[in-house]
Length: 385
Image 1 (cartoon, one colour):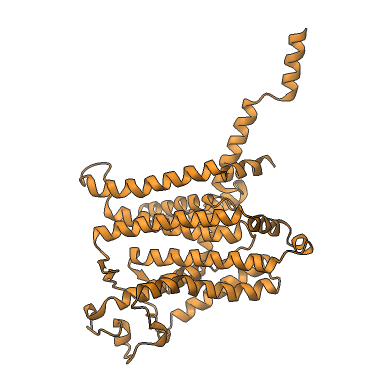
Image 2 (cartoon, rainbow, N blue to C red):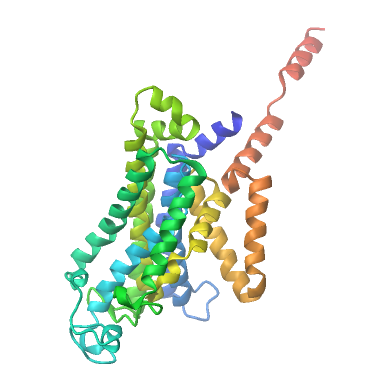
């Protein structure tokens, strides 16, 4: 109970305000260090590091979306990579339509891969993606629709626990196989790449990179505020009750299906937005983003940071991906072993993740600083004597 109270204090108004202040400072400080300091300065932030931090921000939003459904509703989705990739594909389709005659084949109406495959006309599901507003709408609508349909079928049938995880993983695996096919019209194995511009700005320009970084940070802050509003509302209390005792919540007359369906759909939208911000920063989207292993890795981020804490998922995403960047450069053959060992250590010794461990340390320090009641009584007796 003490640990849970400590975790609750980390989600206090002061806690999340400090978090948002640090995020705002990061939004301002990193671009300033990139633009104003010379490359030889030790405090200069290179442009490639700016893009790398932008990727981490997208991953943090993705981890936040999973924590919303797993940490608070107790439903472990191993298919969030599908929502992330679908949002990325929607953005990639918009970026491909912006290439125009600058492609290899110079066809203003068809992307290069369609010309190569002898397609004669643009498929109907590509219509409208030459407009940013339509692409932005689809970034949210497509993952939301898939999550709503899948969630309605699963939650209505009262599928929970490992069975829900298996269904979501089967879903992402099926989508990956489908998108690998050239007949789907999404670039097959190669995916969508060779982007030129976004909203009229050169996608490789330094200013565009900074803009994408700032957009990623701002959206992460908004996603955190939305998620926190949900989990601190009456709905959030119902979700936590569902996580801890779903049958009792049903007995009390609450609609478990509607509550879980709503938060699952919202989490899919956040994941889709994360994918849309990720694609222009890395320059490619292909079916490998739907790999079941990627979805499992998202769950590792949340577990490492601290499930059911929101910003713990953000911390986990930065921690694991920072370690991944280091180990894949220093010792790439050991990265997967490190990731597996990290997950095992967290499962056995840090079940509440980094945030839970910090709360335990604070509780121990508080116990040491506060004298036990027996010690207070003994001291009082000695004083009277």
